[in-house]
Length: 498
Ligand SMILES: Cc1cc2nc3c(=O)[nH]c(=O)nc-3n(C[C@H](O)[C@H](O)[C@H](O)COP(=O)(O)OP(=O)(O)OC[C@H]3O[C@@H](n4cnc5c(N)ncnc54)[C@H](O)[C@@H]3O)c2cc1C
Image (cartoon, rainbow, N blue to C red):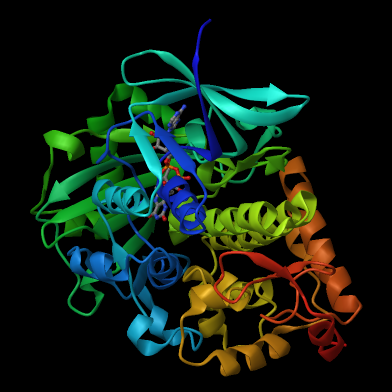
């Protein structure tokens, strides 16, 4: 077939948060980047509750802080839960984490159509060539290495773009991830979500009125996310054994779930479901939690939901998508500009990304044990982070996207970096044993993650320390001062860590 061929430094598949973040950071370093999305923006997407690490870290790097602050999104100071054995709802505030400075102790609840569109327009503003209604059909290979993509343009014409690297940021529906490795589904999180939108749902009194509310009920749990003073995103997450209920129609199933959850019934007692426009339908998502066995192969990298996805109870999706985008752009910048080794850079990307994913995964397996009270969850967060902090603070640090904050000064954005460095040393716990938390499941999914935990233990046992001047992994890399590339840890810094 005759194809029109173009050349770029990098081709990015998908214009969600992962695709627009990675492409913008690459364009900031003057690479020629083509981003293809099959949809037309603004487009609908689920995943509306964000974490402070995204707002104050990634959006700042992207130069979007002011625009995001002016966009009118609902301010989220934390989360409120009706969970575990405690019948009374309890609340966590981001301000509890000492690593987050008081003025930054919030995130936003966003309409994703609006938020993703802001990120994509910002990519264009930074020089990314964005083409909407362009669907990638396959990868192009040369000598076993990925060297481009085939796609169909907005007029249905087949085209080809060649590049030094292809980033797959096309989400859970990726058509090309299997070229990198197998997608391994979790045996533990086998749920489905049924969700829709309501007008005039009740609000908690301030300052909790912008919080996400998660309420457990007999068949699962609900999210309740205020998107404006009147619009609320409401979703029921239930085990796949309840899928039968959907056969009677989504509306009937939703009404059944709402009736089973007294807190959500009360909040929605005067509300009406939106039945028109972008929010007018009830939707279902299955294919719950998974990770790819590998995140990169020669010439191609998986980021965001194309690489891995975890149950949304702590709103980690956009955080993981944008964090992995930063790590991958940093790697490609270092390879193309500084001539650094591809295996070293992508190895660093993959280890850091898996570590962040694992932190959420480990903690969530415990959180799903609904028989515990919140003190137990707090304790589990503390173990996951190997933290000596107060239990409540460790919990909030984790669910703020804060475990990555310890490794990424660029995501921290606090006035008090020295204090954090000090805490990093306290965080080291050579006795800490991550392995028992994997004991509950012996599936292949966790085996992959155990490798990463073992590396951390090895690192701890030889006395290496984490920190912005120390590699996170033995022989690993550290972020450059501007955060846009990697650099080797200096021998002086390594010696200081001995
Ligand atoms: C029920 C549920 C609730 C969630 N709640 C939250 C939450 O509260 N907070 C949170 O942070 N996260 C949440 N998430 C997760 C969040 O939705 C995702 O993690 C996030 O959208 C991932 O971003 P991404 O950029 O990787 O992919 P996406 O946002 O999915 O973007 C992928 C893009 O790729 C494009 N694309 C796909 N295929 C092709 C192709 N062949 N060619 C070209 N373009 C293509 C698509 O059009 C799309 O625009 C939730 C997820 C679910 C399922």
